[in-house]
Length: 218
Image 1 (cartoon, helix red, strand yellow):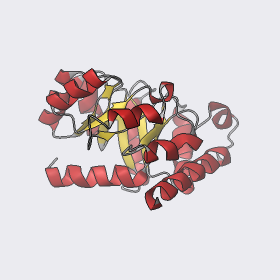
Image 2 (cartoon, helix red, strand yellow):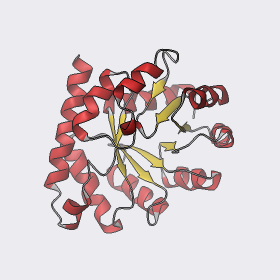
Image 3 (cartoon, rainbow, N blue to C red):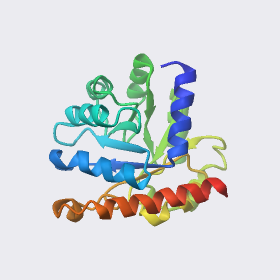
Image 4 (tube, rainbow, N blue to C red):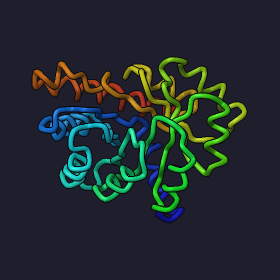
C-alpha cells in the first residue's frame, strides 16, 4: 500500500467517523446487519477475527458491498491473521493491544494497522514502532476527556477510541479529537438480531451518522 493509498484510506475512515465493530455475530445475520448499517449511513465496519469463519465472512461482505464500505479486521492477535484478513479483502487491521512485531509485520504487508493502546507510555512505544493510527481501548472506561488529555502531548496523533462507547457518545469523542470512533454491540444489539429486527440497527446507525455530520460541521 503506497502512502497515497494509505492517505486516502485514512480520509475515508475519517469521513466515516464511526466504525461499527461486529463481533461474533451469527454468520447468517452479518449481511443483514451490514445492510442495515449502510442504510443508516454508517460507512465503515470492523469484523473481528475471533468471530466464526471470520475470513470467509470478511470475503463475503467484501463481495456483497464492493467499495461502498471501508472494511477492517479486528482483534488481530497474530501475523497469520493479518495475512488471512488481507487475503479476504480487509482494508485495514486492528488489534486490542500493542505488539511491535505486528507493527513490523504490517509494514511488510504494506497495510494500515491500528494497534491498541491505553496509556501514554504505550502510545509513545507504538508511535516509535511506526504505527500511524492508535486505537484507544477500552475508551469507554475513561471517556472523551482522557482522549483530549492524550492529545496534549501527542498532538496530531490519529486516535480511534473503541470499547464501551454508546452510539449517543460518538459526537463527544469526535469533538475531543478522534479520527473515528469504534462502536460495538451498542450499535448492533444481539437481541434485535436474534429477533430479526434490523430496523433497530438502522435507527442506531442513523443516530451515529447524524452525530458525525454534526461534528464535522462544527
